[in-house]
Length: 547
Image (cartoon, rainbow, N blue to C red):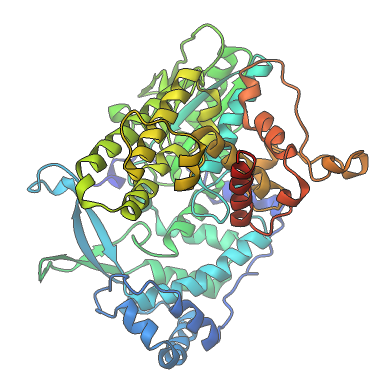
């Protein structure tokens, strides 16, 4: 029995009428979006951006072949693309070559393999052209859900977690606790219903011909599994978006875009299919009531849209973030009770109920120290440039990951442990003894900032991106620009409003720390041409001030 066959019977509470009602305030003109034909110059630009090492599809046409022949191939491929956009998606581009990639465990167990789908590169050229036009339309009409952070320009795991942690921490200042339910969907990309998706595209203003093109893109897809030099028999894909495709992620975002219609009280946060709902209030019983109401409605939305929640193995869970005495949070459906945890992992970041950051720091330290120990064992094989490169690639990301969400709330002992681990990295790279003192000279030699200064740099970059309109709209809830007409001093130009929080925990929120760091910067640094220039200027100033 397939996953789709196990779904309960739909009550159609969130059918097409609900979708139309949800989008009614956008004033979308029916049939207003259609494809525009492209030039060979557009195709040439896309071909030259292909990774030459990109694996070929079942047609064995490699990225290097396309790049080397870009000038000759641009025109015929342009004709193929334009013919496709006025008719259908080419049948030859719908065959996927699937390679099984071993993850872990016994190699004789098929469940220990991840299927990697390789599509013809020509199909990706067509998809890129279509995606650019679709994205332009979606942005022009502000269609995508504000708090959807997956597969969107300027959005990331870091921006999502920064806003989420800030909301929880600032809530503590007004004695609010925050309840959250994290929802795990089973194979969401693979069970997407084509008929429902096409109906939603029509409601979103895609004209009849364009909807027919997407129908031809999604249907009659096939795959063959390649093992060594042998291929399996032909398999068919009747549901879901094509794995490894360029259009697939955006189509999924449009499929779940109206999920908010099921919510009456709670906030919804999405990162592609990673879903959580949260509600803040001074009274825990009110939090429990609102979470239960919206969670059960959301369960019905999933059923109507043929998506399945994973209730087993503690996949779907709840947590109560509070500074008060610990309370239980009873969230349940008719058939399942959701287990409450004292800490949860969301998008790779561990959040604990007191928002201390301790669990995340322990996780980061374990990975950092494990990788340093591994590199020490390879010491005799590596030169200084290789050591530094490996530390930058394998270790630095663990210091940086979502650091604006958890570092500021850490106790001093954990901050010291993180700095000690970074010092070990420096000693390793520079070939120094285990007890050698690490000072500003060594930081300058390796061109790294100390951990706390590196985090402050990340916070300053977030503020820079906000000030220059390069971040998600929901960061407007974190930062606010000062009114330029009321600025009295030159230093106050291009500054951020400093909120007044009473509680110490709330003063560790990004909305409090960010303006302090940003407002202390000089005007020349704030006026940097781009993000990279801004980061380099901050680092340069740090070392100059300590010379």
